[in-house]
Length: 463
Image (tube, rainbow, N blue to C red; front, side):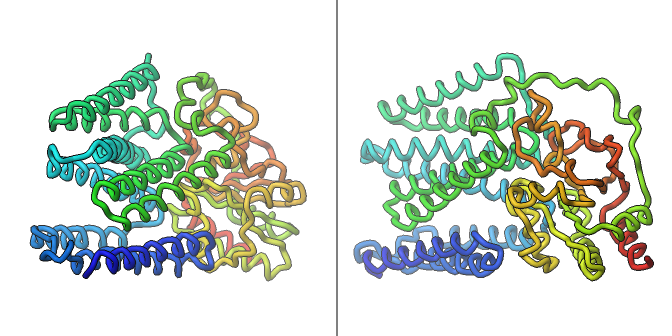
């Protein structure tokens, strides 16, 4: 296969990636977009086996190792993708993204060793860039995975002088990068990789709570940039196209998510260093709350005219999307106006709630974004909050210095009645109390969301 044909096939695969991104922009076309992207990735992988460089034999000197690596990756990736729960999907995304960044860094190091003294200055610069950003993406993604999996605290991790340690590590990374470009050599490149891994850890530690998904998106953009830079070093148009698409889309998504959180990206990453300590006086168990039974909830819903359902991570944990759809259909059959209020970062990643509700065949026109649903809470009789906390917490508006201050929220407090479905009084992902739980118009229904909703459906049918 000639280089021209190879590049044209790579261009076709790139077009598939573009169409995939376009399809993923809307729930109705997301499945089709995913399939188109898979086709493009398959073509991009297979074409390598048929490309001969300038008439030489196939440039696959380690065909056995390549096929073995593909087999191992398939054996790990397919079961992981098929068995992962929706509640664990963000962790899987973070982990796979980190693996991509680490792979790009390793490929750049190996290619650097192969080029040796023949490497041009431009190739060395792109190699250095790939190693830095790839290693940062790898180690940072591992930390986000551990936070989401709750293998470590989900709160921001700060320590005295932390900002100066981060700044000093970044200066060291840049200094060693200049050393690699000026002096070449394997030793400085490996030192650069080690410092970059350390910086990735320090970079993500101060981020916590609802800000973690933003960092995942940013690290995803980093991985795209490393792939694009690797494409230059490897003289691969396909890698440049794919990496640029991932980098650009990840950057746009990061910006949109930061705006949805009502803060700058810098504030998201380093706001923990300036956050004020929170007053933890007054334990939750010492404050009265109003709890109710499924029958109480059913009676309240039966006489409502408008109900807004606010899904959160607890809905995903309980796999209650089908039950909540059944409840919504039952209310609609009674003439009740029902809508779903979707916060941009509800769950653990953008679109998390949309995917869950689409799985239960909830009509798309019932899903209202935050800007659409907030003005209607004043005319809402009942707001049902299912496993959400931070995205409805008034502290985001009323408590300067708290981890979520400034984040736009779903203003369920404006509804006439609020029903909270919770397992316990445990705070949300950001680790702060929700004053709305203690509001006299709030009724708490404790227990597993799916089991509680099933009881509410049964009680509502009996009325």
